[in-house]
Amino acid sequence: MDIGIIGLGLMGGSIAYALKEKHRIFAYDTNNDSLDYALSSGVIDQICFSLPVLFKKTNVFFVCLYPSAVIQFYRDYCHQFPKGSLLIDISGVKKSLIEELTSIIDDRVDFVFTHPLAGSEKSGVENASANLFRNQNLIITPTEKNKKHNLELVASLGEEVGFDKITFLSAEEHDELIAFTSQLTHVVSLALMDCAPKKNDIVSYIGDSFRELTRIAMINEALWVDLFIRNAKFLNEKIDDFINSLNKYKLAIDSCDETALKEMMRSAKTARIAIERGLKE
Amino acid sequence: MDIGIIGLGLMGGSIAYALKEKHRIFAYDTNNDSLDYALSSGVIDQICFSLPVLFKKTNVFFVCLYPSAVIQFYRDYCHQFPKGSLLIDISGVKKSLIEELTSIIDDRVDFVFTHPLAGSEKSGVENASANLFRNQNLIITPTEKNKKHNLELVASLGEEVGFDKITFLSAEEHDELIAFTSQLTHVVSLALMDCAPKKNDIVSYIGDSFRELTRIAMINEALWVDLFIRNAKFLNEKIDDFINSLNKYKLAIDSCDETALKEMMRSAKTARIAIERGLKE
Image (cartoon, rainbow over all chains, first blue to last red; front, side):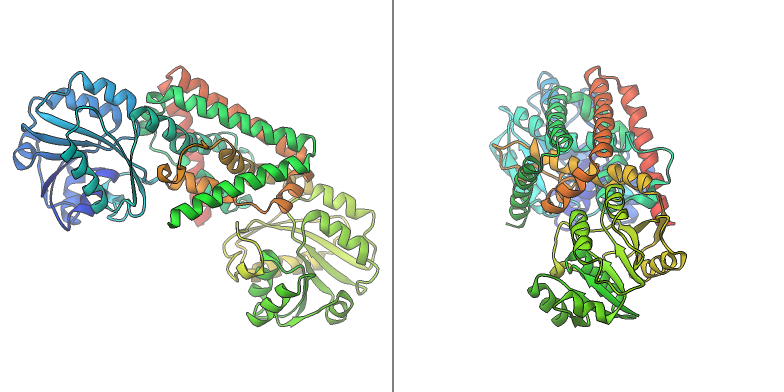
């Protein structure tokens, strides 16, 4: 199949890399250096220096842009897409995106919304990897307009890219779950760095736990500000839930309540071990 | 040198493993299975089934017990240690431990307090590794009673075990820093599991960030309850600081303040990248 990648960063590059063995990959990006790098490194098969050129090559496109950029991009180019095009979104927030796009999506295209639950603190196509999505999770949020065969094609491409579990969720379910599993974890990591002691050479006093919990604080701020603000309601609810849980620990520690602490720890441990087992299934 | 390991779990076993090439390692534990495993796997050179037997073999001991167990152990056996013994504590909290021990440490022994900043969510000597401490941090908290040559010996053994940065801190400085870098991270991980949605099969909706941030929720609860309660004051201060940082993010998200969010993210990212560079130096 001929596949177009619109936006060739870490995500677009990794999708291209993973699909290139079986498919012919055309790519468009506003950054020519990214395109040159991708072609010379074998990430893609062919560069398209303009969208009209890309639109002549295929009618299946991965749109690998930040959420707000997806909307602007679609507004600008919706009338130029080949009739019968399949557009695959991969951004990390769904409800506001789908709501804004629904009013402008015309019958020429079928826009399928997905969220690959994988990434890296390193951005750019230079960090793309054919294995980025290997054994990871993909969420697809179907809309009423989506054609069944396109949803099936997207799931099948998802399998080829390497995803292990592929799940269908409503946009609302997606945004609430992701507020917890992905966005809250980033807020947590950032907040840990925010309250880090400034006076000490902290690098001499940390272990693996601190390194792991703060890795994702090396964040792509343009992307994550967009994600946080577009999912503000759910994210702030999850921050509140999390602060409540912290306060439960604070209370138990303050009153030296060993029994309560052990019980909370055992319950957290049991739940986390269940996840570990689920990952291996 | 002949070295005694008292308490043969993950930490004692890993110290034994790392030192065994150059030294003769004797070990005592109340669990005979751990001793048998360690001998047959080459973690130690010789089993001592009782402390009096161990006390005849050497006068340098790593005391690899939980903080409260260190105190009880020393109370029970302080009069039996060979004169001139060096005891090396490796537990994760210092002030309360040193205060309680100071009144009972007699001149027969020199008790040097250290904290290896490494571990694993897997406990027991079966998970011991000669590389557990490779490139990790060791903190030594000297007391007024410590002999200079013993502090030097402990630092030198620390290097042999594989530690990269070895730092001397007061017990107070240690406990305040560790409340942040080690104990707060464990509370954070536990609290994330505490507020995880119960109804969904969450394993299908997580990425690496969630996996990394919750790995240490697979906790050894007996050890960590002891650590949390012995450092309650500093730990609860750090939880408060962290909640303040979370609330800064909440406010900026709630008011869609992109500028404030980007600034906070950039500052967190810069600080975390500085740590990453420091790790590689």
